[in-house]
Figure 1 (cartoon, helix red, strand yellow):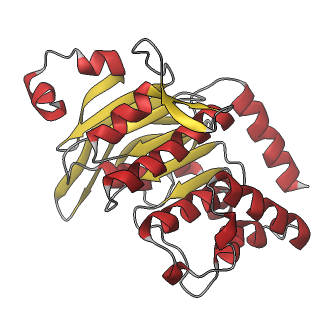
Figure 2: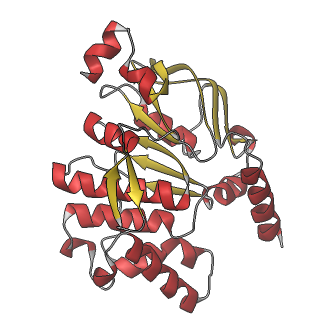
Amino acid sequence: MAETVVSTEMKDFVAGGQPIVEFDDVSIGFDGHEVLSNVSFTVAHGETRILLGPAGGGKSVLMKLANGLIEPDSGEIRVFGRSLQDMTENELFEMRAHVGMVFQESALFDSLNVEDNVAYRLEEEHVDPKEIHERVREALRFVELEQVINKFPSELSGGMRRRVSIARAIISKPDLILYDSPTGGLDPITSTTIIELVVKQRDVSHTTCLLITHRLQDAFTLATHRFNLQEKRMERIPDNGIDPSTKFLVLNEGHIVFDGTTLELTHTKDPWLREYIE
Protein backbone atom coordinates (compact mmCIF):
# COMPACT_ATOMS: atom_id res chain seq x y z
CA MET A 1 0.00 0.00 0.00
CA ALA A 2 2.80 2.44 0.91
CA GLU A 3 4.51 1.75 -2.41
CA THR A 4 1.26 2.58 -4.26
CA VAL A 5 0.94 5.86 -2.35
CA VAL A 6 4.54 6.82 -3.18
CA SER A 7 3.98 6.02 -6.88
CA THR A 8 0.76 8.05 -6.95
CA GLU A 9 2.43 11.02 -5.25
CA MET A 10 5.30 10.83 -7.75
CA LYS A 11 2.95 10.80 -10.74
CA ASP A 12 1.08 13.80 -9.34
CA PHE A 13 4.35 15.68 -8.78
CA VAL A 14 5.72 14.94 -12.27
CA ALA A 15 2.40 15.95 -13.83
CA GLY A 16 2.54 19.23 -11.90
CA GLY A 17 5.40 20.59 -14.01
CA GLN A 18 7.65 21.52 -11.08
CA PRO A 19 11.47 21.18 -11.37
CA ILE A 20 12.58 17.55 -11.16
CA VAL A 21 16.04 18.41 -9.78
CA GLU A 22 16.97 21.51 -7.77
CA PHE A 23 20.40 22.42 -6.40
CA ASP A 24 20.27 25.38 -4.01
CA ASP A 25 23.66 26.89 -3.03
CA VAL A 26 25.30 23.46 -2.78
CA SER A 27 28.95 23.08 -1.70
CA ILE A 28 31.05 20.02 -0.98
CA GLY A 29 34.72 19.29 -0.41
CA PHE A 30 37.04 16.40 0.37
CA ASP A 31 40.24 16.47 2.43
CA GLY A 32 40.17 20.24 2.66
CA HIS A 33 39.70 20.71 -1.11
CA GLU A 34 36.43 22.30 -2.23
CA VAL A 35 35.00 20.37 -5.19
CA LEU A 36 31.72 22.26 -5.70
CA SER A 37 31.13 25.82 -4.50
CA ASN A 38 27.69 27.44 -4.13
CA VAL A 39 26.16 25.52 -7.03
CA SER A 40 22.54 26.38 -7.90
CA PHE A 41 20.49 25.19 -10.88
CA THR A 42 17.27 23.38 -11.76
CA VAL A 43 16.33 20.66 -14.23
CA ALA A 44 12.78 21.16 -15.48
CA HIS A 45 10.30 18.38 -16.23
CA GLY A 46 11.07 16.91 -19.67
CA GLU A 47 14.36 18.78 -19.93
CA THR A 48 17.71 17.35 -21.00
CA ARG A 49 20.52 19.06 -19.09
CA ILE A 50 23.99 18.53 -20.56
CA LEU A 51 26.77 18.99 -18.03
CA LEU A 52 30.09 20.08 -19.55
CA GLY A 53 33.43 21.19 -18.17
CA PRO A 54 37.11 20.25 -17.85
CA ALA A 55 38.12 17.05 -16.06
CA GLY A 56 38.22 17.42 -12.29
CA GLY A 57 35.63 20.18 -12.25
CA GLY A 58 33.14 18.32 -10.05
CA LYS A 59 30.74 16.84 -12.62
CA SER A 60 30.71 13.26 -11.31
CA VAL A 61 30.44 14.49 -7.72
CA LEU A 62 27.41 16.55 -8.74
CA MET A 63 25.84 13.43 -10.26
CA LYS A 64 26.39 11.43 -7.05
CA LEU A 65 24.80 14.24 -5.07
CA ALA A 66 21.76 14.22 -7.37
CA ASN A 67 21.25 10.51 -6.70
CA GLY A 68 21.65 10.87 -2.94
CA LEU A 69 24.81 8.76 -2.87
CA ILE A 70 26.69 11.47 -0.97
CA GLU A 71 25.54 14.51 1.03
CA PRO A 72 26.67 18.12 0.50
CA ASP A 73 28.51 20.07 3.17
CA SER A 74 26.02 22.91 2.77
CA GLY A 75 23.02 23.89 0.67
CA GLU A 76 20.00 21.80 -0.30
CA ILE A 77 19.25 19.30 -3.05
CA ARG A 78 15.66 18.52 -3.97
CA VAL A 79 14.61 15.70 -6.29
CA PHE A 80 10.93 15.35 -7.18
CA GLY A 81 10.30 18.25 -4.81
CA ARG A 82 11.75 16.57 -1.72
CA SER A 83 14.97 17.42 0.09
CA LEU A 84 17.41 14.51 -0.16
CA GLN A 85 18.99 15.47 3.17
CA ASP A 86 15.64 15.00 4.91
CA MET A 87 15.04 11.51 3.51
CA THR A 88 15.56 8.28 5.44
CA GLU A 89 17.44 5.41 3.79
CA ASN A 90 14.12 3.78 2.89
CA GLU A 91 12.84 7.02 1.36
CA LEU A 92 16.05 7.39 -0.66
CA PHE A 93 15.57 3.83 -1.91
CA GLU A 94 11.99 4.65 -2.94
CA MET A 95 13.17 7.83 -4.68
CA ARG A 96 15.83 5.92 -6.64
CA ALA A 97 13.11 3.56 -7.91
CA HIS A 98 12.07 6.51 -10.10
CA VAL A 99 15.63 7.29 -11.25
CA GLY A 100 17.60 5.45 -13.94
CA MET A 101 21.41 5.58 -13.71
CA VAL A 102 23.84 4.94 -16.57
CA PHE A 103 27.39 4.66 -15.25
CA GLN A 104 30.50 5.59 -17.23
CA GLU A 105 31.87 2.04 -17.17
CA SER A 106 28.43 0.36 -17.56
CA ALA A 107 28.77 -1.27 -14.08
CA LEU A 108 27.20 -4.56 -15.18
CA PHE A 109 27.41 -7.66 -13.00
CA ASP A 110 29.95 -9.98 -14.68
CA SER A 111 28.42 -13.09 -13.14
CA LEU A 112 24.92 -12.37 -14.50
CA ASN A 113 23.79 -12.66 -18.09
CA VAL A 114 22.24 -9.72 -19.93
CA GLU A 115 18.67 -10.63 -19.01
CA ASP A 116 19.47 -10.84 -15.29
CA ASN A 117 21.50 -7.61 -15.41
CA VAL A 118 18.64 -5.69 -17.01
CA ALA A 119 16.05 -7.34 -14.75
CA TYR A 120 17.97 -6.68 -11.53
CA ARG A 121 15.87 -3.75 -10.27
CA LEU A 122 12.55 -5.43 -11.12
CA GLU A 123 13.62 -8.57 -9.28
CA GLU A 124 14.46 -6.45 -6.22
CA GLU A 125 10.91 -5.08 -6.43
CA HIS A 126 9.49 -8.66 -6.63
CA VAL A 127 7.78 -8.09 -9.98
CA ASP A 128 6.16 -11.19 -11.49
CA PRO A 129 8.83 -13.21 -13.42
CA LYS A 130 6.74 -13.36 -16.61
CA GLU A 131 6.31 -9.57 -16.59
CA ILE A 132 10.04 -9.13 -15.91
CA HIS A 133 10.95 -11.23 -18.95
CA GLU A 134 8.59 -9.25 -21.19
CA ARG A 135 9.90 -5.91 -19.92
CA VAL A 136 13.53 -7.00 -20.32
CA ARG A 137 12.85 -7.90 -23.94
CA GLU A 138 11.10 -4.56 -24.46
CA ALA A 139 14.05 -2.63 -22.99
CA LEU A 140 16.58 -4.59 -25.03
CA ARG A 141 14.48 -4.07 -28.16
CA PHE A 142 14.63 -0.31 -27.48
CA VAL A 143 18.45 -0.41 -27.51
CA GLU A 144 18.43 -2.92 -30.41
CA LEU A 145 20.11 -5.73 -28.47
CA GLU A 146 17.33 -8.28 -27.97
CA GLN A 147 19.54 -10.91 -29.60
CA VAL A 148 22.13 -10.83 -26.77
CA ILE A 149 19.67 -11.53 -23.95
CA ASN A 150 21.43 -14.75 -22.91
CA LYS A 151 25.02 -13.53 -23.27
CA PHE A 152 27.33 -12.41 -20.47
CA PRO A 153 29.01 -8.96 -20.28
CA SER A 154 32.41 -10.50 -21.12
CA GLU A 155 30.99 -11.59 -24.48
CA LEU A 156 29.94 -8.04 -25.44
CA SER A 157 31.81 -5.09 -26.91
CA GLY A 158 32.18 -1.88 -24.87
CA GLY A 159 29.42 -0.20 -26.85
CA MET A 160 27.07 -3.13 -26.38
CA ARG A 161 27.69 -3.15 -22.63
CA ARG A 162 26.85 0.56 -22.53
CA ARG A 163 23.60 -0.12 -24.42
CA VAL A 164 22.70 -2.88 -21.94
CA SER A 165 23.35 -0.36 -19.16
CA ILE A 166 20.85 2.00 -20.80
CA ALA A 167 18.30 -0.84 -21.07
CA ARG A 168 18.75 -1.49 -17.34
CA ALA A 169 18.25 2.22 -16.60
CA ILE A 170 15.01 2.55 -18.59
CA ILE A 171 13.34 -0.76 -17.70
CA SER A 172 11.47 0.76 -14.75
CA LYS A 173 10.26 3.67 -16.93
CA PRO A 174 11.98 6.24 -14.69
CA ASP A 175 10.96 9.87 -14.33
CA LEU A 176 14.63 10.93 -14.31
CA ILE A 177 17.73 9.43 -15.95
CA LEU A 178 21.28 10.30 -14.86
CA TYR A 179 23.91 9.60 -17.53
CA ASP A 180 27.49 9.73 -16.21
CA SER A 181 29.64 10.06 -19.36
CA PRO A 182 27.74 7.39 -21.35
CA THR A 183 30.16 7.67 -24.29
CA GLY A 184 33.36 7.77 -22.21
CA GLY A 185 36.08 5.52 -23.62
CA LEU A 186 34.13 4.65 -26.78
CA ASP A 187 35.16 5.27 -30.38
CA PRO A 188 33.33 8.05 -32.30
CA ILE A 189 31.04 5.69 -34.26
CA THR A 190 29.95 3.79 -31.14
CA SER A 191 29.55 7.09 -29.27
CA THR A 192 27.11 8.27 -31.94
CA THR A 193 25.09 5.06 -31.46
CA ILE A 194 24.83 5.76 -27.73
CA ILE A 195 23.86 9.40 -28.28
CA GLU A 196 21.17 8.25 -30.73
CA LEU A 197 19.70 6.13 -27.93
CA VAL A 198 19.72 9.13 -25.58
CA VAL A 199 17.94 11.19 -28.24
CA LYS A 200 15.46 8.35 -28.79
CA GLN A 201 14.69 8.15 -25.07
CA ARG A 202 14.30 11.93 -24.90
CA ASP A 203 11.98 12.20 -27.92
CA VAL A 204 9.97 8.99 -27.53
CA SER A 205 9.55 8.88 -23.75
CA HIS A 206 10.22 12.58 -22.92
CA THR A 207 12.17 11.53 -19.85
CA THR A 208 13.92 14.25 -17.84
CA CYS A 209 17.67 13.69 -17.83
CA LEU A 210 20.97 15.06 -16.57
CA LEU A 211 23.91 13.98 -18.74
CA ILE A 212 27.66 14.39 -18.32
CA THR A 213 29.82 14.31 -21.43
CA HIS A 214 33.44 15.15 -22.18
CA ARG A 215 32.73 15.22 -25.92
CA LEU A 216 31.45 18.53 -27.26
CA GLN A 217 30.43 16.78 -30.47
CA ASP A 218 28.07 14.52 -28.52
CA ALA A 219 26.63 17.51 -26.66
CA PHE A 220 25.84 19.47 -29.79
CA THR A 221 24.50 16.38 -31.55
CA LEU A 222 21.96 16.08 -28.73
CA ALA A 223 21.01 19.73 -29.17
CA THR A 224 20.68 19.71 -32.96
CA HIS A 225 19.15 16.28 -33.68
CA ARG A 226 15.85 14.52 -33.15
CA PHE A 227 14.62 10.94 -33.40
CA ASN A 228 12.46 10.16 -36.43
CA LEU A 229 10.05 7.49 -35.21
CA GLN A 230 8.87 6.62 -38.73
CA GLU A 231 12.39 6.16 -40.08
CA LYS A 232 13.61 4.76 -36.73
CA ARG A 233 16.78 6.82 -36.82
CA MET A 234 18.31 10.04 -35.55
CA GLU A 235 18.30 12.99 -37.94
CA ARG A 236 19.36 16.61 -37.90
CA ILE A 237 16.57 19.05 -37.05
CA PRO A 238 15.68 20.88 -40.31
CA ASP A 239 16.64 24.50 -40.97
CA ASN A 240 19.47 24.40 -38.42
CA GLY A 241 16.88 23.87 -35.70
CA ILE A 242 17.70 23.26 -32.05
CA ASP A 243 15.86 21.03 -29.60
CA PRO A 244 14.19 23.43 -27.14
CA SER A 245 14.23 20.94 -24.25
CA THR A 246 18.03 20.54 -24.32
CA LYS A 247 20.02 23.01 -22.22
CA PHE A 248 23.56 23.30 -20.88
CA LEU A 249 25.45 23.65 -17.61
CA VAL A 250 29.20 24.25 -17.67
CA LEU A 251 31.29 23.62 -14.54
CA ASN A 252 34.81 24.89 -14.06
CA GLU A 253 36.79 24.44 -10.84
CA GLY A 254 33.64 23.71 -8.88
CA HIS A 255 31.69 26.74 -10.07
CA ILE A 256 28.89 27.02 -12.61
CA VAL A 257 30.22 29.30 -15.33
CA PHE A 258 27.27 28.84 -17.70
CA ASP A 259 23.61 27.91 -17.31
CA GLY A 260 21.41 28.36 -20.37
CA THR A 261 20.29 27.40 -23.86
CA THR A 262 22.27 26.09 -26.80
CA LEU A 263 22.08 29.43 -28.61
CA GLU A 264 23.19 31.33 -25.52
CA LEU A 265 26.20 29.02 -25.21
CA THR A 266 27.22 29.21 -28.86
CA HIS A 267 26.88 33.02 -28.86
CA THR A 268 28.62 33.64 -25.54
CA LYS A 269 31.11 36.50 -25.31
CA ASP A 270 32.87 34.98 -22.30
CA PRO A 271 36.54 34.40 -23.32
CA TRP A 272 37.00 31.21 -21.28
CA LEU A 273 33.76 29.67 -22.59
CA ARG A 274 34.58 30.63 -26.16
CA GLU A 275 37.94 28.91 -25.92
CA TYR A 276 36.39 25.86 -24.25
CA ILE A 277 33.66 25.26 -26.85
CA GLU A 278 35.89 26.01 -29.82
